[in-house]
Length: 456
Image (cartoon, rainbow, N blue to C red; front, side, top):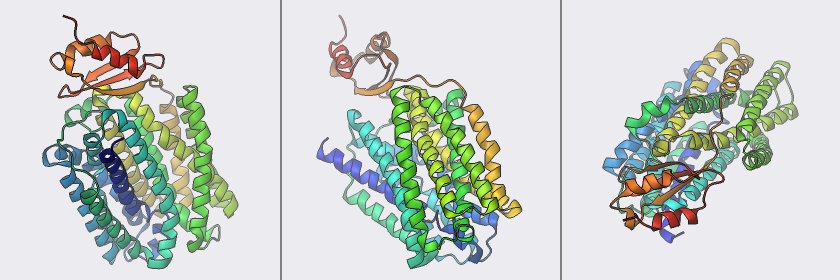
């Protein structure tokens, strides 16, 4: 990895993480303040918690497309500016409506797709998988850190102060963008990384991708709904002081992550990830039913901790496994579009969990919120019974110079190789995307085929 690529990966992962921290920090503490916010109702509190998901879902694909014309770094800076503005609006708000507006503006800075496109501009084809792994790890670590730091910051600076801390983090992200992240020599579409608007309807209509999009929507709906009811119950039901909530979340999250790892390793090693994910959905069902029972009967902190370890084990397993399934199911020429649709469904799930959960919370209380997740999870389990995407490894190669004049002939030659399941060219015919079967050829064999050049 070159020094320039290292700066790109670390800088863009930091921007991703800093921005997500600004969104996650309020998750474990917001509902502890809902009763004291002027004008707040359970519905409006749920909207405040989840509305950033709606604006993020609506704007992330347009942001990515506009960046092809106006430039990656200016669009990321504009998105971070909206995030800072939203954080300030929420931090200085005097009622729940101001917080809702601020959260909507936070989500409107939807830079995720642009960050991925800039990653593709700056990182070579061979190292993109590693770059995506670093970004994914950063998101996971950010979530865990936010669960720990949110209650601590709440005790020190309060809810308004947390929003102002988020604004400061947004400014830090802008500084990282301009002072650390290199500028790309040129920008171009990356169908393996960024969405294409014209391909979106056809990609979203694919049955396998529809099932996976429904799954990530439901997963994040359940997450948002749980955080509407969990923080207040830790105080009222489990007797845990708000300042000590970090001591509950951190061990629970770490234990859930530790339990998830063996399942991921075994599922991938034996190519049974589809069944592992179905089992995780069943575990979520059992956990949500257990939480509803514990809330109804006033279960103690240890019962709650056990259930939340199970919840986060299943959640982390699905959060890690579903994107891999999308990658396998998506057409190679439109993988970025498929991932963009998947991320849109994820953010819509956060919004739906906050809004619908808030409405149910006001109507029937926290137990009603948890019980309502059960039929939704049953629907997901039924949808997940569909056929599993075929296993295979994705490879991205630059088209060799010897084939520059006839890339379609190279494409046809590789499509005829028995170990290649799918092959596609980038729009500018500069990159070749291959899906190789598990028993297919290695990179060295593929390179030798490409370097031979066209037959005369």
